[in-house]
Image (cartoon, rainbow, N blue to C red; front, side):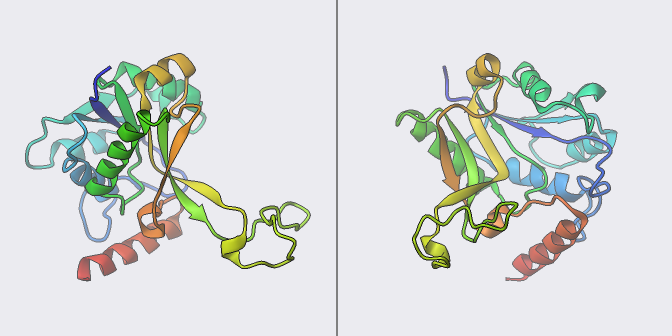
Length: 231
């Protein structure tokens, strides 16, 4: 197995929660979140290819219109049956090894605008180092620091004898932020998963972890991006 890493970036037509979230202008930028993400990924040093997998002609037009060296960019015209709201994630995972050439796969999303090339490069480096330490995959996470209730209103992450401890004394939990999942192509093929049995938790801060999942998230992300650009 080599250390060749492929980045798998899926998009599709017909976003329901945020209409045209991948391609509509973002913070005044034509090409939207997709163009922004591709420009970030093309600056990565640790991947040998970026596979944009989509059934959206607009996404393809945006990707192929980016100026500069696009040798790393591969366009995969994903079948429509793998681009539906009802598509089983397991079916898409089974498809990925057929469209990437690397021995390791990093799966990321267009909807994480504050995760840049250095962030992904650190993730890949941590993953490769983790393989030597007994880990078989990596998932990006944000530490969860608040009270978590069950359906009966009981705090489920308090392991102390105090009813309301300091939040930093609560049980440590982590939330997957969907910035990156990294593992080998072998695990995709043999286990049908984008994570192995022993993932390394790659902790990220709140801004890097921000994910556009709803319309209000899109608006907040634009405001955050505009502020960052002014700093």
